[in-house]
Amino acid sequence: MEKTSSWGLHLFELFFLVLLSGYPLCCQGSWMWLGITSVGVVEKMGCANLPLSSKQKDVCKRKPYLLPSIKDGAHLGISECQSQFRHERWNCSTSKQPSVFGYELTSGTKETAFIYAIMAAGLVHSVTRSCSTGNMTECSCDTTLTGSGSQTEGWHWGGCSDDIAYGTWFSRRFIDHATKNASVHADEALLIMNQHNSEAGRQAVAKTLWKDCRCHGVSGSCAVKTCWKTMASFERVGNYLKERYENSIQVLDRTKRKFRRKEKEQRHMPIGREELIFLNKSPNYCVENRRLGVAGTRGRRCNRTSAGPDGCNLLCCGRGYNTHVVRHVERCECKFIWCCYVRCRRCETMNDIHTCK
Image 1 (tube, rainbow, N blue to C red):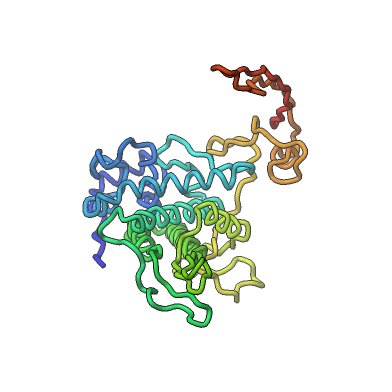
Image 2 (tube, helix red, strand yellow):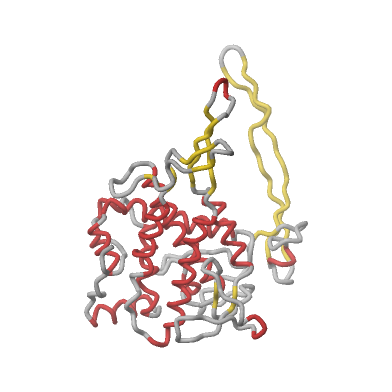
């Protein structure tokens, strides 16, 4: 494995980047790559023209064939984050700022934790998929299990198992190493927190692997089965991480490498690699706060009959809601008339739409 080089940026360039983004130096390299989601055909632009840190550009120049996978990984992470939180007060909104996610990237909250985890997982998933489909010569299938299995149960490992080891290695190198040499002491705890949660995202892909099998035998008797390991759908990875988000652990802000739980009675309990951790409590996201980049929930659509987070009572934070009647017109009851046209009726429905005050 190659050793990573130093940042290689002049002091003026670093100062300019901080002024441009308004975010701590410790966290820049890890999020800059998200900007490629708004770039056109990335493989035609060249590494030098992409919104990447200097270390990420070095990796890009060595492995330009991974650019489509990097962009796909960013899209996967953002889309799944928005899908998981679409009904909640914080709905994983994005902006046109260089940071894409805005305040949440550096707030040190449980939302920050989820973002770093889902983005790292998205990169693992995308790169590993490219390996398994044969799009790259540097990696392919995981053959380490081939030949083993369970004779008593009538199956053996074979086929093309997803090689998440390569995808995991690349995700660490591309995301974590981009900020590893940053030395802003005040933000060291946030940097370590983000790296821990990125690793938790990678662990989520590994934890959700499942065994897929194909039967062999006379007349489909399934006397012998060939099995391989395959990644779960990214939606399932997102569900796994959402559960970790709901049970995330608040930790003490310490400059040492090892975090401790903030709750005194739980400090003897170790923190697992797959757990999400956070430093600061989240805002309530009810009311707009432009300084923090919080959009608030005013105008959000809610479900009047739901008791969940999408219900008007919870989503509107007790402020109440407005009801609008929307008329919807569409073609319906279409029939094919011989010969040769389709005749439809014009159907009209009236629906109540509820939005937060």
